[in-house]
Structure formats: structure tokens, C-alpha cells
Amino acid sequence: MTRLVFFCPQKVNMENNIGHNFNELVGQTIQKITGAEKGSDIIKFYLSDGRIAYLQHEQDCCESVEVKDICGDIQDLIGVPIARASEDSNNDEPQLSDSDESWTWTFYNIGTSKGHVTIRWYGTSNGYYSESVIFGFLDHNVQ
Image (cartoon, rainbow, N blue to C red; front, side, top):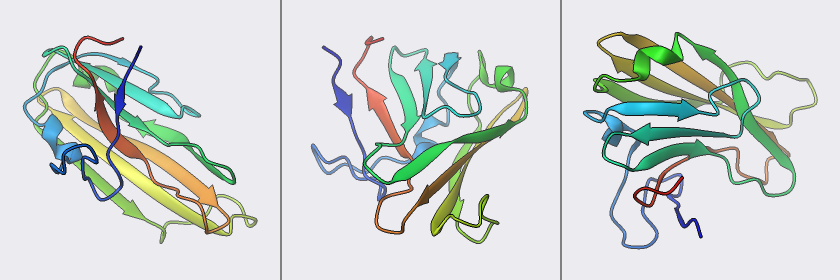
């Protein structure tokens, strides 16, 4: 059985109240990436220490959150230590549809010595449901 360890948008580990941030990827080496494509709702980063880091939206009812595009070459992140990892969100960027009542753009910026990648997520809802992306880790050596 796969056990997910989730972190709420405030970056708090709900199991033991230890804070986790996307920038914890700095210094890690990614061996493989899956799901890094437009329309995806989960991206997994297979790390050299055996853990799997992921970005995902917990789908509820009346919202949609997915990868809208990836700027840069995702292969630049593989095989070398991550030098920079940051998350930025805003809803000042333009909405994609006039019917979107509430929207949030979330940008994950990852840099290595080979290059820089920005993964852009777009979330929309009626304003009641979350549009956030969760960063977390799967247990060691779980596929």
C-alpha cells in the first residue's frame, strides 16, 4: 500500500508539525521525473536518496487545477543537484476564461547548473474550493 504524506498549503506536516517547503529540494538530485506535461495533475520527482517528491492538487468537487505549461527543458533537472527551488503564487495574472470566478497561478521554479525550469499550474474554482498545489514526499522507495 502506498502511503502519502501530505502538506497543507501553509507547508505544515500534519503528522508531526514539522514545516516543509518546496525549497527543501535544493541540494537533492533528481533521477527521473514523471507527469511533467500539460494537463497533468501530479508530477513526481524520483530523488537519488530513494524518496519521491511530488506536486499535486487534491481534487475535491468544483475546481480544476493542472499544469498549464513548462518553460525550459525538464531534462536539465536530471542528474545534477538542484541549486534553486521556489514557489510563487498569484491571482493577478490573467484568468484563462471569463467564466472563471476565482483563479490562482502557481509557479514552481527549479534551477540546476544545466538550466532553469518553471512549471506553471493554473487553478480555478467557484471561490469556495482550493486552487492550491500540494508539495509532499512519498515514503522511501515507494513507486
